[in-house]
Length: 161
Image 1: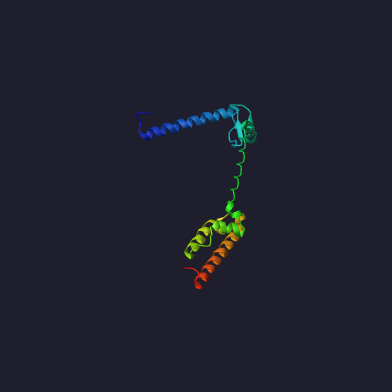
Image 2 (image 1 turned 45 degrees about the horizontal axis):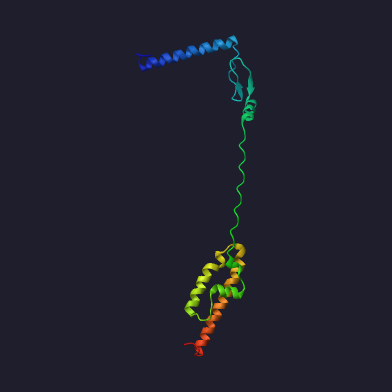
């Protein structure tokens, strides 16, 4: 095909393919055992050999296939330890957590309320401890309000300088 034009080389290739097709037809007519036109559901085992169905071939491959060992389930993480201060719900314990001594100023009490709320507000604790946090906030607010009321009464009576 060297030294030929593109057109001439294409013609030569077409002639060669035509000759090959004629040879293939002659072999079929002689009964060479080759079967043409089978679907992909059949698999041949060489010239003139036995054919098996696609499902039989798939089963043979599946026999060789080994299932990977199943992954062990991941252990569930342990629930975090509950904050111990949320378990202290007696008024004396809440007063101790607030560090109330009776000598605080109103501004100091308001600052302690905000600090206490940051650590104990029900929205910031685990769901199973929200009732305890709510109770602690109620007690803390009651204690701080009562202390502020006492300070205001003492001021109105002139008992505080």
